[in-house]
Length: 319
Ligand code: DGY
Image (cartoon, rainbow, N blue to C red; front, side, top):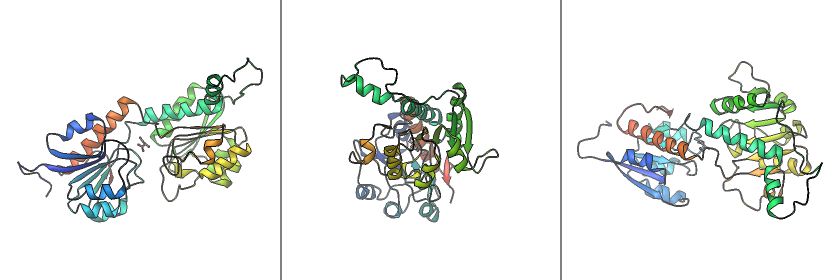
């Protein structure tokens, strides 16, 4: 029975600080504990803090697995503050009747904007140019200095044609691009290998699942044009990062823009950090004030609905 008695308040763990807009919604009915006001809690800290809670709001940085669920036998909901949920053990949640929710839709346009920030920066060498100016290495206008690749009228290949993939494609129309996409669920889907052979700009928008881990591997990178630009704002594990670093170093692909990495934070010792033809961002594609607030409201709304025994609006696991 989910109904709250008059004097009972739900116990909620919020693994890390989220915007106030979400926390405010919890206040009337929940005693919530924000585990980490700053930085990253360890897995052990999360397990300890989960003892006895009714609900968890977690971030993509925390592994929510059987150990966390064991600590909270009365757990009703894991409300994920992200659209991607590869860090939550869905099978384990389903087995225990724990609902899992996410935050789709509210971050679509913001993430698509940022994919374009990376496309433009990687294709037109914006970061390299910025570094030259700051370091005093900019001597003069040069006919062949910092040459990039054109975006206008190029072929945009979108891998994963869901909400965000489509939003990226819509923006491509403004540049007069021909858009092709790979998404087995869609009628006009182009085989992935054909897309990689044809596209000038490749933008990745697939969730990380066992089937998409290293979707873009060494062999597939070999299919890309030497002038191609690869952008990833989905999950790092979708790309074989070491193989990409090799391709970029060898110049078999022109450049890349990456917001996500196989292991985050990316170690500054990783070969990618020594390359000039890659733009690296610290997983900030959804990071606008308005969007992060909306994500907080959505996560809290999902959590409260589940605690009240209602069907949360954004359910990814239905027991
Ligand atoms: C998500 O929501 O999955 C993004 O990676 C962060 O907003």
